[in-house]
Image (cartoon, rainbow, N blue to C red; front, top):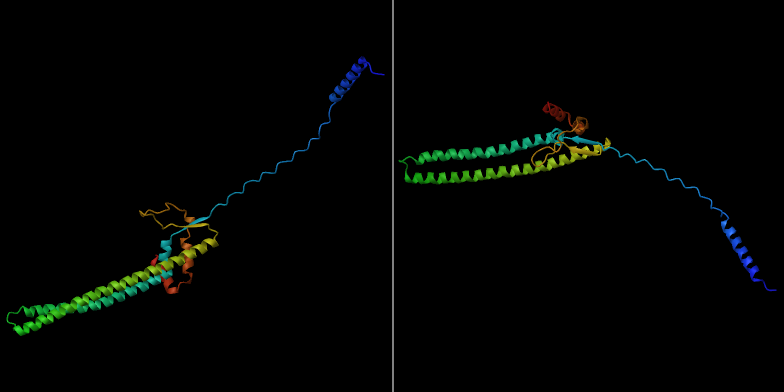
Length: 227
């Protein structure tokens, strides 16, 4: 038996009402997940303070016992060179005296021509000997002094290298990060450091350490010179 139109309309209305009621019912909410706590913020690590010291390298070089010993050796070499040069100078002065004597003899108007010729030749010979000896004496002194200066510069560089290595070792032992040379200066001879605390100066410590193995005689001389 076919459904009447009225019945169909009522059934359709019932279905719509049921759907509306179903949609109005409260839907279950999802369970909220607990939030993760943020990682703890680490405090910044404090930067360690640099340990800085100064040293007067010129004073260390001056008071280093090996420098003092070499200076004595150098003075002895200079004295020997001067002695050898003076020996040559004495010969030259004797030749000059001989030439003055010959000049007096040649000035005599009564001198015989033959005698005069002999004296002229003798004077010429002594004059040439004197010129040659003076040239040789000058070259001797220049050569010796040049060799001495080159040796002195080489030894000075070697001593400075020893001093710098020793300073680096002392700094490492004391946990010092940087050591500055307070005797250094700029191109107009002005010091790089206007003021440095005396408490951070290593000069006396370095000198004492370097001279620890100095021979007693040299050590006594160093103490005498620094008074």
